[in-house]
Length: 560
Image (cartoon, rainbow, N blue to C red; front, top):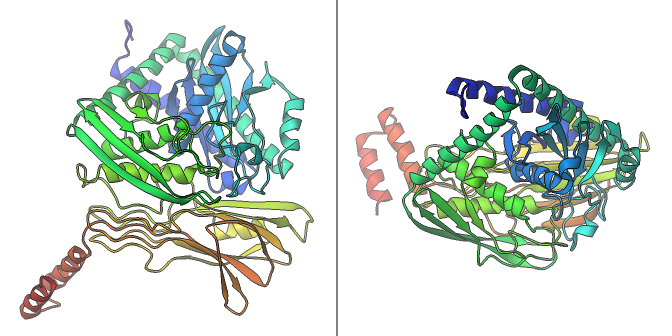
């Protein structure tokens, strides 16, 4: 190492060392957590930020939706606390309006790392907690018209001060959350992951020195930005536009429009959401952090999937999102279900790029983050339980193959909770866990299939809250592909009778004589369906299954 740059080998050593720290913290958090939402579904992220709050490295399995949120938290910490930040401090926050969060169930923690008296950076993580209080069990119900009803708002506060737990802060948090023992367990997992990261980064500092690491931080961000701008340059200059609508906000506002114009010139690109609808009463509003994450994910996925997920990607893009709109809401807007809107942003971006990048875009995916909450009192233990899950659906058809079935898509990497985990942890029976037949849109390559889950309470009555998107507006196909099948909720009694539930279903009582059925949306297909038929028939012809005379008759019929 010499001068003010690192040679490629030294930079690669630093990069892999930092990446291994975030990955180890991710696994530590996952294996230490109490809730199925973390230990089974992996709804958490870990990262390293520098002393200015720039996100440098995010764990490999982390969620793209958390990119801007963790960096936003650390920037707020630096701005608010500045020189008073000390070794052993640990900060906690979740508020999307004052602390850089995205919605209240996502609780951020961050711990500074020092070399002697010099602040080097932060270890940060974020966990989606199964409940943070509020008017509805699970803190994810639709139909809430202000953030005050969605749960406990946590501004940036010190949970640890110079290594000492602020027990009064912790007790205040737990008092306002359901299942305090589970919340304590997940918070302890976050604390452990932070402390582990601080120790590991401290080892790197001892080995390589502060100058080496801070220089590596700068070069990682700079090289990421250069790489993204080079990828942007490969796009044709021009203006690309698209728009789509979400179903509704759960409080009567329907067909909420998201409008996008992309302007590309040289190595610069602007995503302009001017013309998108104003923020809505219901909790589908998106903060600027969420919009940033959706844009950065989309550009990275389309142009350079292997580029590091850090602040350099954010700096490569200009975003215009007028305040007070659905894509940049202001307080006291409710935001609990913002991921559905964020997923729709990704669809809109893919739609805008369809003509210029036909080989890379896909049909509209399930376009949602279908959530289901079952809550009640376990008849055996007498203890309250909350089962929260966001379920996957269809992935859009691709240029060379069908879309994937029953998966989380785009900016969330979480897993579907195994049946065994549900039945072991909760007094619930999963009577069906299957793919929804024929729910993928037809095309040269069909869209992926949605998921069906049928769940029944055992020996007690429980509450069901469900929130679905793409339940009215089907996921569209692309380049001639057909739309996928919308999702739906319904109750199924012992006689097989169905009772349809609204897409935003709250406070539904379910008895052991009734099961709740969740069907998530399929996805749109890619390309003309007749191209798929022609391709399959041609394969049969080559295999000798059909005669040349049959093939001539087929082509005459299909082209007439």
